Image 1: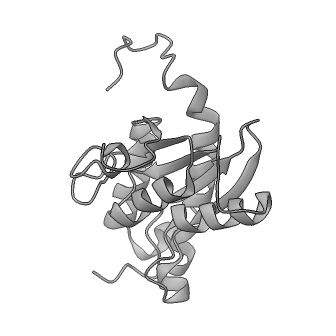
Image 2 (image 1 turned 180 degrees about the vertical axis):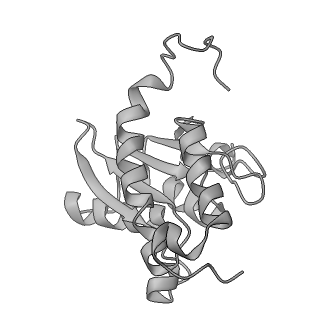
Length: 172
């Protein structure tokens, strides 16, 4: 949680607000195919966007087509190798165990997320995969950036009417 009073600068989270808005832009694309609105971007060490992704499990029938995995894959193609040293993953929802593992394996420097996932979060909520001392790489974690906006998008998706996103209601 933020330690800054409302309306005051938050030096931990404020620098990540603009990149999180890019991830939110990705997230709103997912419901077009019935996917949960989660979006991600990977930033290079200089802040340039190297990869983007939004959930595509329903669209592709691929259980690994989470926003984070797709963005990490695109970033790896952009840099020409799997090591994303110095890079930052920015994602609208706290990563699950698979995605947290992918962050560790990619050697990304940090993961920034919006909404907390109390049911499947693996970056501090239910599990803390990325900071497990037994692993050889532990990225920095910046939680709850634009958390309210990210949570609202998810809530709207799961409470939506058929016309909210222009796609069929999700299969539960």
